[in-house]
Image (cartoon, rainbow, N blue to C red; front, side, top):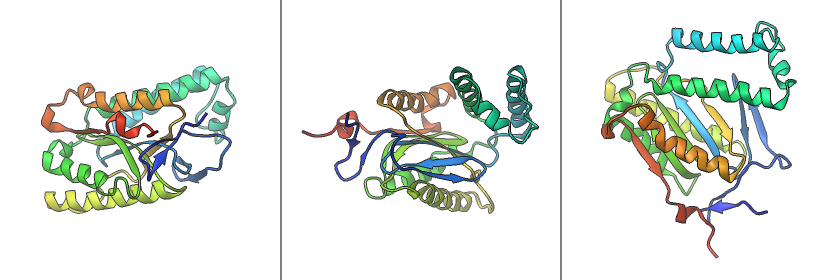
Length: 233
């Protein structure tokens, strides 16, 4: 079945495990596949204070111990990969949900509550939309950003994310009269597997401000209308 949709010049599709993809190993693995829609999250440098991270790690380690895995062992990730599929899904989804819940608590200075600063991020995301990438959805939150976007070639996603983060960090630091790192170096990305997952993530992004109990002027949300995403006859 053809699952290609999107802008005529920059269509997108869902992850195909049988086709070529690029995996770049940093602190986190980053997967990319030509034209595949990707869910991305960046967070500000101060968005996760050390006590919050340590609490999350304790929760992770407690789950691993319950399943007979010691996180101090170098091969603990491969041991997780050897668990039954349901246990693996429980591990990854549970940790992701708790991490996202911590982000939604809006730790840190949360300077992106300011409309002038969130506007720098939103403007940067939309600037080359339809040219260098296809952007379908995003939410600029007080201390993080979620988005869905597709890129025309493998390797383009990380290159574009580095460009977005550099440009917006310079603009925000200038507005604040500061210097130094604004975003965490590593972001999170996930190749979308199905139309159902795509729709779930669109709703997740749209609902992010409500979960963060934000006023209308404390976030920016964008979602491309569905009639622009469906293929034309």
